[in-house]
Length: 600
Image (cartoon, rainbow, N blue to C red; front, side, top):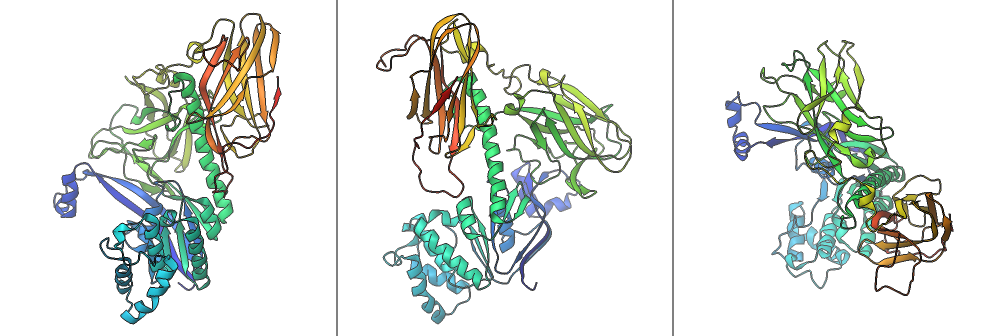
């Protein structure tokens, strides 16, 4: 392998998901190989697939990605704990792995005895271990506790001892998976220095962490894993920026949906709940609902709005049948029209086909993003399929009672990948006839009566919007980034005087900003008005915030004994987030004072 210590080619790992525990036992004992007619007692789940990676000697590679991306599965295949389903793994001779706290050491042994046991397992003799013992204890700084049982150690103490032992013998490859997160900042700094010295001696380090600051501080290269695929590979800063941008966009979607829920349900809505989805069942069937005459490969199903993606499934890709995902293929062993995940013309896909001469539809669940639905139509479906044969087939959506036809795909036999676009402007309104909730459970609509919880007939608030200085809607801001808060309100009858009151709270109810002073508008005629609060830079520290505002004829700041006369009150029905700048770990405080500018 010359200077290459890790080489992965076409690496993939598939797990079998069994319908019944007995099927798993029968498979382990080889009984199912005898009962050859039982073909559909499990479904496949690809955690990783088609992964190619080369790591040179002495590289410090960081692996990032959200939970469930496949990072730990990849590491387990690197160290040999898990065998790949397909592809090849070539690694250096000696691998030292720190994967999880609580493994590798006997809890009843003292720290000293665990040092001896661990180094003996690595092939060191008694004199060699004795020579390294003092160095390990000194680096871990556990002199007072080294003769205590490991079960009495804190997570940080355990991490110190585990890292010290693992790096006392120079390996070819050092694999570290999150365990340093339990250590304090001082010890993590020592670990970084030691890992750098090891790479100077030719050791390759694979470092997995959710702490982007640690990855940037230590690694010379990074890869971003998402749903079992490498999304980005290269310079640490470039990959980190792409990953953080993706994370921020996901948070924007969640907060956009949260603002919809706050307007509908009020302040009792939890700010930590996930993005709201309308879960819709869709399927492919032949035009006559008969058996498939020939396979039809499908690689992608996407539902789009005017400027956003409402739902998407990459059929046949890794984790395409992950039921924890809002959008996924529905693979029911023995009762589905989906074939196994295969590769057709260099693209992963699943084929629409009949199983055992039975007629079944090929179904999937689409989690339609409610925040994207607010942007409006037109709406359409994109079906990426391999254009083979001439058998037409249909794409349909279930409205809770029956399937509604979205359109027909007519293959022409060009033997290439094509994208069919099917308009959904007539179908989606029927799907959402009961509102944005799940089918059969009508959701509250954001009517004026719901939004205006204390309003009268003179004036009412229509919206509270968060914007950057360019006027683009945003819900997530970096610390110190300028922001606008725009309050739109409608005057229904002539009003002599109106005062706008603004209050901003942290998620746990701590008031951080109150504006109960002018501007005051005089002699307003019926119509729509707005008020913008410009924070340049924003004075809010890294937190989640909720906003209350109201329209009053006047407001007495010295009186909190009653609800004062008002036109309308919008109570904690909007939220936004302020995040720390990239790489900052220390607590930055709740507020950063700057004067606010107001304009009508």
